[in-house]
Amino acid sequence: MAHSPASRHLLVVDDEPHIGLVLRPFLEQLGYRVSFAKTLGEARTAMRAQPPTDGLLLDLHLPDGSGLDFLRDLRKEGGTARLPVVVLTADGEDRVLREARRLGAALVTKPFSPTKLTQRIAMMFGDAEAQPDEPSSEPSPGQP
Image (cartoon, rainbow, N blue to C red):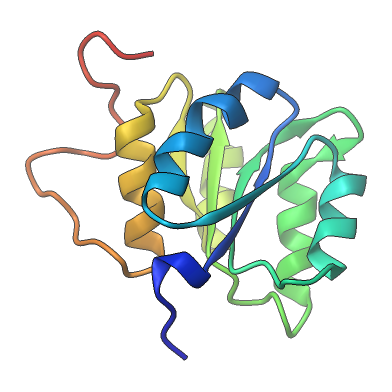
């Protein structure tokens, strides 16, 4: 079922409050509804709540566990097996990044450009096309 950006709900799972503060205006400007979870416990609660979550922006290192373990659990459940996920991480360990990709997640490394991350999320939902001359994981000059 196709959704317009205004009907999509994105759950941002990250324990760094500034991530949400930076991203929210960019995402809301595109019409996405955004909610936040700072722990895996909050994320699990949010995943059971209404309205349903249409996609996740997921940090791998959270205070109460591993975002990678959470992603593995999501992939085992029928309702979330194909949930669009962008993993946001400062972890450059190849094994971890390969596992996240194997589980079907797109990867964006910190530091990131909010504009390009927003573009990556829109692409994940099929609301935008890739910009071939602008890789989405590289920060823009002058941006964090």
